[in-house]
Image 1 (tube, helix red, strand yellow):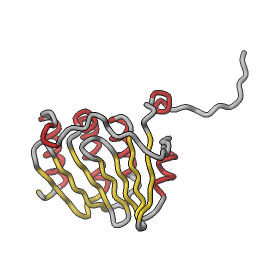
Image 2 (cartoon, helix red, strand yellow):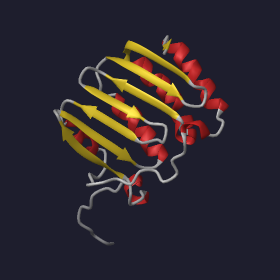
Image 3 (cartoon, helix red, strand yellow):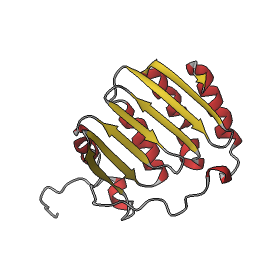
Length: 175
């Protein structure tokens, strides 16, 4: 038998992450900004997970860059929005091309079309929350090298239809 000392448990993400995965954290004029870059599945999952830390009523804005449609809603119940986003997670990670912003009066989480996550807040709490999720703060993150123009996203009818259905279920208004 071998006896070893207590070793920290390594998550799958830590073991197989790319060296460019991490986040920056800055403050300007009382607004703290985090920019998170990781693989697509990790970012979409992190976006969904972190929404649970927002208040019970949120505002939502969605831009579908493929169809050119936009929706918005105010004072939506967070559990309903999280349920809709959970259904879209796999499609979002696979195709991208959607901008989603979920916000309250204090915080905003935005997933951009290139699957990068941005957090804007009036407090620095997100720094500690991101570190607690196993992300590493870096002086600079490497953005996606495969960024494409808004008009050139490949067709994704499954995502477009699922997004339209989610907007209808949530009662979002066209913007």
